[in-house]
Image (cartoon, rainbow, N blue to C red; front, side):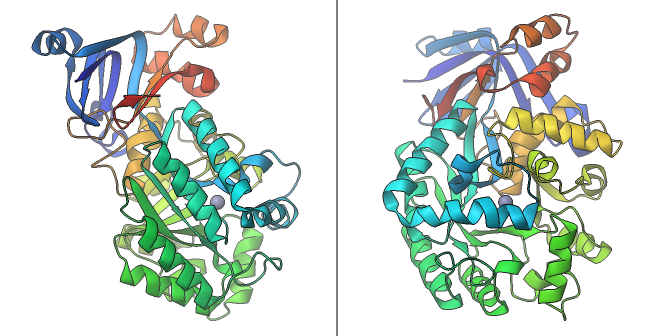
Length: 426
Ligand SMILES: [Zn+2]
């Protein structure tokens, strides 16, 4: 039986960052017809109701029907240590991250955190994430097992590190290759799951391990590859000292087969001109993690320059370096960071980045991240008056963007009225 969801409907016919506001479509009283896990029609509520009189109707009134949020860079194992005080990147990894990641050798602990993580993200309206796991294969099995049970489209990979990490949290070039390959063969393409080749970043991988990851990716080009790039200045200096013959940070990946379409680079704040050009040339994805960049004191991503030059950009929380599980809070931080660089992002651009833009960064925008015919029915319904503060501001709104912006800036999980995954309400 088909389901007809009624409410305000927001969808995208293009990218508002490059094509302007006309790329966003809003219906005040729209309908979304769902059957077999897919969106099969989008239109005016009344028209769809008349054409499909037997569809089961769920009327969300004035709430906004949107594609589910997509979080393009997270570390689910850092769920329990989110909001840890007072450190910058390298110290933060040593003090908080590595001790916590050590615990994921225990499959029961990994399963507990994976379940908790998806409870939190779904309650925040996020229906797809792309996650780092830990070096332990158990952490990958826990993530994909939980995502599979919930019917989610999900991306993840075993984090690989063979140096500059504590004992108990390192693999080798060979075991990283072997374990990653076994996990890839077990999970990639199963149901809605995709394996991602995942070296953590150049400081924690030897050239041999980076080369092994490059070889694995070359053998499985349908996989994405994710890593970190130029998050903090002392990290960039460290990379230069570890790879003295590299032209720049990106070159440490490029020379080992880890640059190409389908590569996701988290942060990408301190880029040199050659790096900017190469990233554009190969059409790799840059993943902006604004709450993390302010929380760890990293810096201000150049959204204006990089979007204008046509780079592929996704948005992400970077849990738990990021300080929130909410893509609403993440959009607000992206707005604030861009303001500090003189570019006020329009609500349509922020919403696009958190849905279709993030899907595009994962090269999945033909399947998820939009309310359009043929898309998978991962849907988040947003209450635009979820708190007294938001309601009193939204009441004065002259159009949908003015109505949406208070929720972007002040909203949280209370704004998430309903979530549908693969055509079913949670
Ligand atoms: Zn990260």
